[in-house]
Image 1 (tube, rainbow, N blue to C red):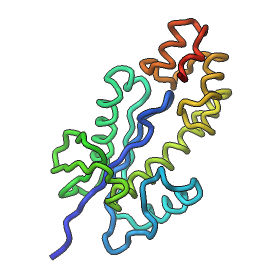
Image 2 (cartoon, rainbow, N blue to C red; image 1 turned 90 degrees about the vertical axis):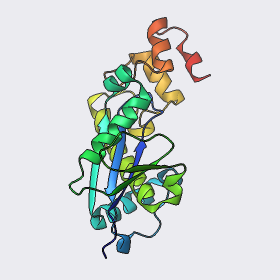
Image 3 (cartoon, rainbow, N blue to C red; image 1 turned 135 degrees about the horizontal axis):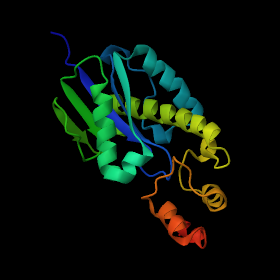
Length: 200
């Protein structure tokens, strides 16, 4: 009897000030799980890149879904995250019999879904999805940095850093900034004045 097709799904970029929230859904071959798969946040960039290649080479299916900064501003970050997950699962060529989602909130899918708190560390298929999502988003942010120079998006990937805040104060937000997020919202409301308080 063949093993059921189980997909893992995880997201990256929920807390950033700029760029999309990105989810990956993938189905691993249980007999070919790359060694060292773990929560992407615990891995070095070099290790993530190597595992990303290994995962893509041996997984049965893989799909990326994202929700843009404008969508995040429109429907809020939680709903945008769930939307990116739905898009990732919908992009799979194979229909999974179960989708394991990291966290405690599940997107509405037309296949069975189960949430797993800490799943990126405990379930290899979710850990693999977290790695692919992180590598894909980092590369995407580096591309956005070329379109929107001066913000350092290729270094902090849109996360809240002192360098990012200084660039925001100097340049104002670009099209990729989430205007509903407090640091950007405060900067816009203050016209650039006093925005250094956003890191507090």
